[in-house]
Image (tube, rainbow, N blue to C red; front, side, top):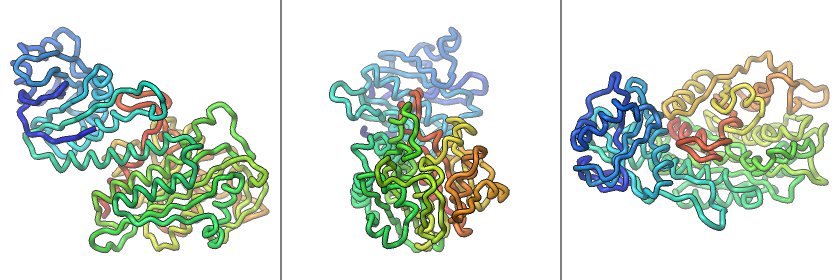
Length: 489
């Protein structure tokens, strides 16, 4: 999709559909373009409200064909809800919803007019993100008809918002890169293929890329990671991407993402129902890679390293068994009580490796536990930390970007759930607080380095299509990671 910025008057915009913000009447701000449109169309907008057909509620989308006085073929009153609660997150959703609805009607070009008082950079960026994200479909592997794609989206405003538009396109394309990766089935994107995609992206956008292969990880002593991969014919890898800012920074941020390209559960095998979705078990790693694509282009002032340990967790004659004891890169020993608790096993070696690289702050994203879905449903990411200041930075970025996160506890009392007489730690606790004990397990490898763990198991995949987003991978955390790096203090 071609994305452009235009400063054309609203009446002169040439597009299949021109979107104008339509707020609920109560407390609606004075918007010149809204009044111009109402007058030019003989009170069409006013009639929509008086008749009750559309009152500016979110996702309202009435269309006027061949509007008098406009170059656009259609005028669309984009329901934006109450003006008092209008935010970039709202605009992102309603723009995405408009794109998804209109492209099914044969519309190939859409323009959104942002007039004062909404001609702001944050809103322009969010609108472009919504359009690009809304245009994404998951049917890439269908042999016949595909869902229609929008050819162009224009952000139109009297203010100079060209930079904000470009910014939004960069971020949304990075999020869609993540969604493309997560959408790939396990047979087409095993660990080495994911590493190759990361290498290709790094070369295109100027990132340094290093891939640790199985032999190198064995030499280093990554026994925790390697025990997960040993049941698969697909070799593991550790992907390392590095971004260096124009001026050296005192802080060094590390983004770590779980990269299990397919998860059967291993010997502790999962139920057959729903197992096909386990291609999404690398969504955390994909989010990290997507974020790095945008970071390379937007050039924040902080150094950022990304680490993605990637494996396939399969049943085989060499699979790790419940009761096996493995030695992690740090030297800590782990009793593997459940081979389906594999994400934490690969992440702890990545965390230790990050510490050896000298990073000062760490954030990891992982589809780690079903327990977080029980706790928070499919609405919030579970956020855990060993450092409140670091957590507030991440949470602030998440709030700015409209990604819901909830602070979960990580008290030392939870250590009582992680005890075994046979090794330093077991890889699971008891029945209770499964998301918390998984996070606590990871914390044991952080060594006091400020760290935030984001459990995205409930939010990385949409079970049903939303008005603004296709069913399937969401790309959650990409925008938060980018914002965190750009606004690092």
